Length: 122
Image (cartoon, rainbow, N blue to C red):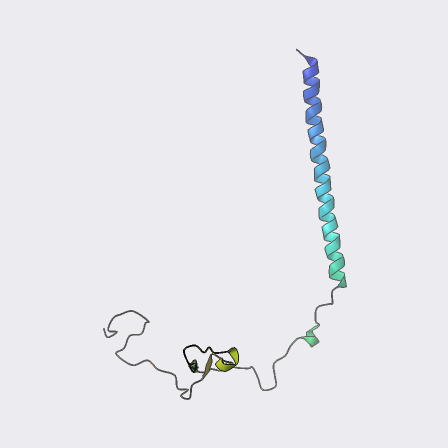
């Protein structure tokens, strides 16, 4: 048996173990440093609001949703074929409130689903 090769093999695995341990210690130190930095940053932030500072309902009660039927604004026509519209000529909103705010209701005998293609009457 060659004792020199055995000694080199044993020394190589010991060196590998030392590298792994040192690398593990470096990773652990980096994680501890990151936690300490996070704690310092958290202490500098403002405290969360107290219960008295929390938002409350208005005196009138909860705010309800508003339903509004809208219709599209028509794009104005340019004066000539060579003319082009500028942004201020198009207006602000792409739609406007509809004059008739009654919602379309379901009619008996009509389909209840969208795009089914059937007659709806069964």
